Amino acid sequence: MSPDETGLGQAGAVLGFDHVALPMKNTDAMISFYRSLGLAVAEHRYLVQVHLGDQMINFHRPELWQGDFSLRAPEAQPPCGDLCLVWQGSAEELARLLQKAGAVIIEGPVEREGGRRVTASSVYVRDPDGNLIEFMTYPDSTKEHADVS
Image (cartoon, rainbow, N blue to C red; front, side, top):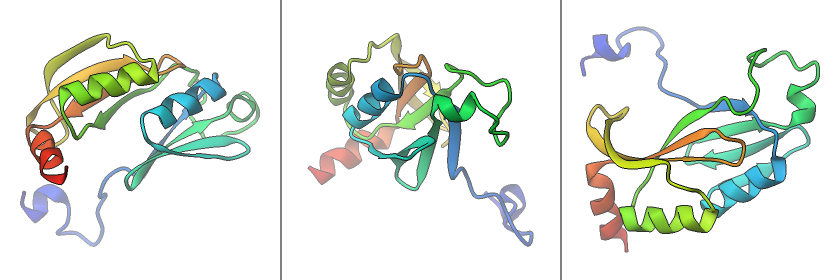
């Protein structure tokens, strides 16, 4: 991409997502689910942070989003998330992980175009609150995983 297409030719630029925030209702089940996926989870008084590399999901606890907290989408209530996570590994490894987490595959694997602008394989599940979670495997993800093992 050229600097004009990326916005890097200007004084500043949006580089990507740092985090997204969603309200949650089933706190204990959500914490257990995301931990069972192997993600780092940090619990705080009013939110639960799920870390994915340099990004994170902030799940607002019910006592926060049901109160006077105004720094949120005012109409958002669980389930309102539709998140896509990048999976590095085989389809079989993903299926085993999802089974261990108690997630039922509701669609996939199917081909989808992802943020990298290439076709990948996607599998869809729902988390305990009902948010749609897509696991996208890019063609090079399995090879990278095989090289690491």
